Image (cartoon, rainbow, N blue to C red; front, side, top):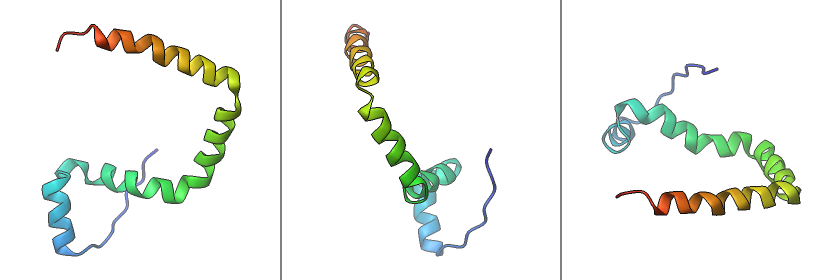
Length: 76
């Protein structure tokens, strides 16, 4: 679920966001920058737990290795 947030920023910063990121992508851009700072500990613990699961890591590596062949054969 998304929530609407009103923030105030300098006009030059807004203009930069608008020209570099794009009008319809500013929210996503800001969220991607902020997310690691506010949800960091939850993700770190989850990633650490996943990395410790050797069977899961082996399965993920096997999947990644298998799919690389699919990309190699695609027309460019």
